[in-house]
Every structure is written in structure tokens, then in C-alpha cells.
Length: 110
Length: 113
Image (cartoon, rainbow over all chains, first blue to last red; front, side, top):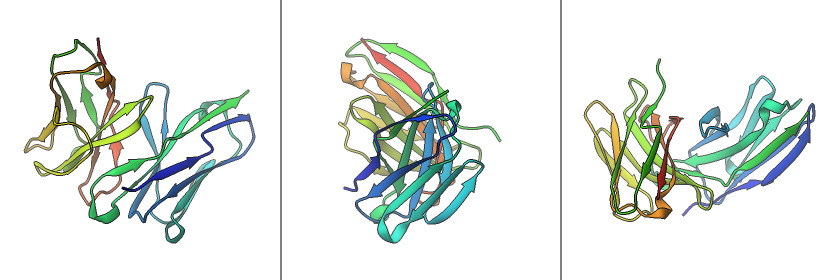
């Protein structure tokens, strides 16, 4: 089945720094999402981005579907950005399920 | 619009027992998916339902089952619980366009002792 790789697995930043998180897919997907999981386990939707670029405040994302990867940019990071970031791809081979990456654990230091 | 709700939020069961978890999707959404999250295996897809039909199933034993009702609410059941079933169980809903943007509930944290 499809494999989803996220990098880096762990990231420590000083407040105010910028970062780029990457998600690679082993096969084409028709749908792609980025999530932030809070300490209570809730998955918060960041972007639904099968292709192209989107921005929401300090966060932006770019998906290059033809090259099977997506990037999440966090600018001017804040301590509240800490947590685990997941990407998930779905709709591959006519299926109706999302496959999640193993996540990037981000810690932003004050 | 209310979000995805899951009940119960926390549950403690004993090995060998069975458990039923419930998920109510966002109003108007017809697709419900279930995921299991553990520290060792990460987030894994269990199954997905659309209009009361299971469209996809993950690689889990037959002890894991689910169903969807006509109002799109869904339940999942785990029989003969094992210690390894301790996990956060997450439900997601989407409008139904395959697969579409998914919205997750807060999860049910199951502990098996």
C-alpha cells in the first residue's frame, strides 16, 4: 500500500524562527491534509491541499502532486505551535481512506 | 455547525470484555471513518462508512467491527479486548465525496487492563 514519510521526525526551534515540514508519498493521492494534534489528542485541520499553495496566517502549505510531496511552512513560530504535525493522503487507487505519516514533533522554546 | 462528537471520551475495560464506541458526524456529512492511534503504530485506518455501507477496511482482525445508521451516526465495536487494544480511537466525518476533507472528533481513549 501507499507509504507516507514525514521529515524531520523531531524539530526544536526558538520562538520567532521559521520551519519547513515535508511529507512524501510513495504513490499519487487525490486528497491531502495537514493536521496539528494538540496535547489532548484532538486533530486540528490546518490545510486541505491536494495541489497548489494555500496560506493561513503564519502557516502556509504547498503540494506538488506530480512529484508526490507536500510542504508545510511555519513562520515566526510561537510556543503555541508546539505539538505533533501530521500529513495524510487519501483517494489513492480509488480507496476511501487516508493514510497518515508518522508525524513531526515540534517544540518551540520561549 | 456542531463538530464531530464521540462518546464516551474515556473508557477502562478488562481483557476479554467488549466495547462499543459512538461517533456523531457533522450535520450533513455522510461519510464516517475510524482510526486507531497508538504510540507504537501511529494513526492507522480502521474502516470507513458511507450511507450505511462499509467502503473500505484497514488491516485489523475481525474483532474490530463497525456500522453506520441511517442518520449517519456510527459505532465501532471491539470484542474480546486485548491489552494491545489500548489506544486513542478517532472518528472523522466528511461530506462523502471520496474521500474529501475529513474533520476529526476529540477521540475516545480506551485503556484495557
